[in-house]
Amino acid sequence: MSNSKILRGQQPVSASAIAALRSDSETPRALTKDEILQTIKDFGQATRRAIQAGFDGVELHGANTYLMQQFFSPHSNRRTDDWGGDIDKRMRFGLAVIAEAQRIISQYAQRPFILGYRISPEELETPGIRFDDTLKFIDVLKDQPIDYLHISLGHVWQTSLNDHSATTPLNEQIKARLQGKLPMIVVGAIKTPDEAEKVADSFDLVALGHESIAEPNWVEKVEHHDETSIRYAISPDDLDELGIQPPFYSFLLGMGGPTSVPLTTATNKPA
Image 1 (cartoon, one colour):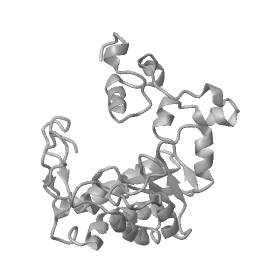
Image 2 (tube, helix red, strand yellow; image 1 turned 30 degrees about the vertical axis):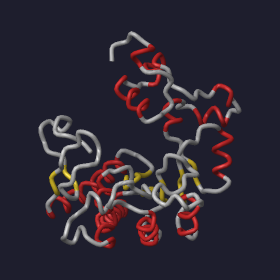
Image 3 (cartoon, rainbow, N blue to C red; image 1 turned 180 degrees about the vertical axis):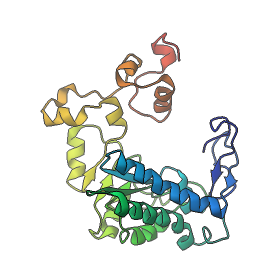
Image 4 (cartoon, rainbow, N blue to C red; image 1 turned 180 degrees about the horizontal axis):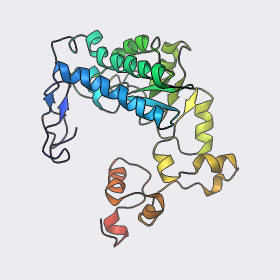
């Protein structure tokens, strides 16, 4: 998803040399087998640094088209070696990263250290990840040495993007598939305390994404029964206070995030 300009002249890398189906996407270079093994070790070293820096845990980002999802996806992974092909081989990279991170935790953590894994249940690309693929992956993930599974969706009650006849929310199907073996974090269009409470009645943990950017003190305000002061939109005049740079504000605006109006119509501040 990156490009050589951002990477200072280096070509992006992926599981295979397949460009993303997005405008102006560059064709990445397929990682070599040695580079794959090194990248797995790099995830482990990032985990070590988090432990030594005093964090409570790390979440492995196997969602939102990042590298671990690229290896699982039949669209971005067209390899014919041990790291691609059938679904079992496409699972291999993510499982190897889990194993390496857990090895590092066992070696370096002096207190309990959380290891989570995040997934996106579907892709729109053809070929691409379909929900049946994800359920097979969950059957394997629920027996891995991780502490929770985080499901990344645009809306917490979302149904299938590909099977329009399906009426059961994806998160409910995933919860049933997990069989209580792992706690489950859900996210997506949860803004108000009432919405969060409703979701918490059905799932183990509730995450706030866009809303925590607009209101960093969301949790504290709920704890102090100060819900009426929660901010649900970001004005261009809030950027300095929130530590948000104009390019990120524009990105949120394009994603339908908690922004109010475009910078060009709302402020004279330089972008």
